[in-house]
View 1 (tube, rainbow, N blue to C red):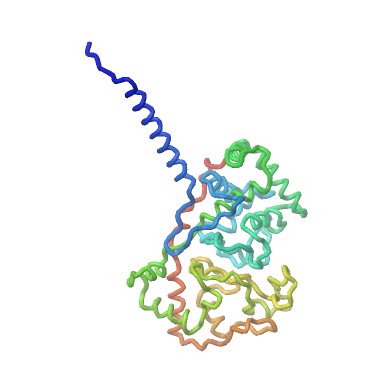
View 2: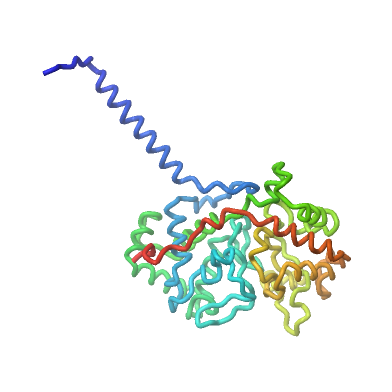
Length: 355
């Protein structure tokens, strides 16, 4: 039998190096697994809350919860019922529909790029995505039959604790089987912060690709920035300054929705609603907080007329006197803000939901 000469210490050192190298590679792989998804072109990194940092397992738990109709009292409605991927994380309806077919008073805003906004809802009453996620779970018009928010949240958590698969996932993500509504909403918010849209023709054009936008869209961009000053509100990479503005929508009704005023009780906030992102605006109609404008052409015409006059109308709204060609070009530019990222988010298969 052939023998092999072993130099003392060599094998031990080699094994140690191999084990150490494997451990290092595994730790690098684990670290990479915990890195948030890279935002598409045109978007900055998402700022994750100190008390709700990203992990892949937490985002996956949030995805399951987001699509699970068992979150509602009658198990007929989930978050995705009003924020569906096939409708660009809206529902393509004028107003949201909750349990029992009840209609809300406002449209369901898209989830896309909500990671870049602190205050949530059309009136900004929620201070974070975590806080926002609690709202529908406690709203009798949306997902619960309870009138009291604490009871509604308790019922939701009790339901989830009765599903062993969820108990195991919460234990893995948060280190406890005795999870609360705060754990539930942290998971949902983590998932929602991964629903992004960028790398639109506009972004590629800004990076130097002169063929990314059509000539019509380029003309529309010039109108957007130079003639109509749309960027006085729709500014920055997300095309929103996060402010609340009265543009007259619904203010010609007998009892109008007073929007931000119902949160702040400040006179100047009457009829003011959040300036939405224009990212994916092509796919998120109907438009405005009440879904009253069906098309982008309708939206442009609303602004072209200077809004609907009322005592609190923002002073920046004036008739624009756009020509038919300019209106068409402006709509074309808005469609150049449709990008990629969110399309890869899919609803779980039936057999993926925890049992």
